[in-house]
Length: 216
Ligand SMILES: C[S@@+](CC[C@H](N)C(=O)[O-])C[C@H]1O[C@@H](n2cnc3c(N)ncnc32)[C@H](O)[C@@H]1O
Image (cartoon, rainbow, N blue to C red; front, side, top):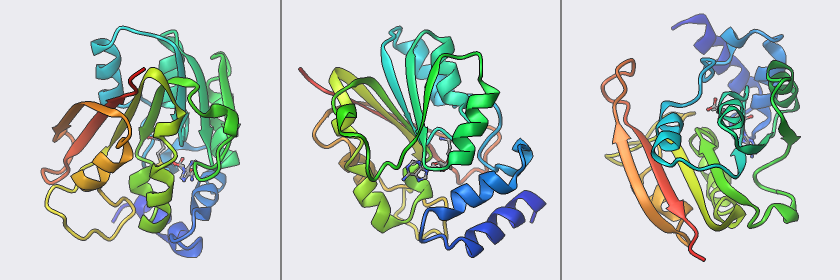
């Protein structure tokens, strides 16, 4: 097992993976070295890049659980007006310093308890690898808070790992079943769903992108 995985497992164990505290513990203990953040490779998610190419549009975007900010920065560079939030103050500080030249509204916030004035405000709500990283009881509540953020004619884009065969995983991450994914946008119109095995992934890792639109 490599040292990054070993370190992440130790912090998850100490910070109790049942709570969300281990995220802050991991970011703050990394001392600004991206090497220690296992999900961060310095680039925006390929499924986001593809979606932006397919949908030549801009507007107001909300990046949920923005981590070290790669997706938020990419959206900003493409002309979006971006708000990005994470539960970890260290991650938010780090991303803000890293992308100091981008005009992004960085916020420390918890998906479980979001500002009321964000409801219906965003043309794009982007969730990458958040729901699969939080334990099921919290995940079920958190998932219901995404769709209400989407403005009329806006989109919710969720990206993560798919649990195609309803397997039991010792997460995090906990790949998501199709039923669960469908429930995330149940009061929106589902307009797209793709899945793929990426060349650098193990063959059993299937990634998905699901897109919903709020009708008028
Ligand atoms: C697996 S990381 C993914 C980060 C980033 N989206 C990416 O793809 O690189 C999960 C992120 O979600 C954040 N997070 C977890 N629970 C959260 C919550 N309830 N509200 C906001 N952010 C949360 C963590 O701090 C962490 O940055």
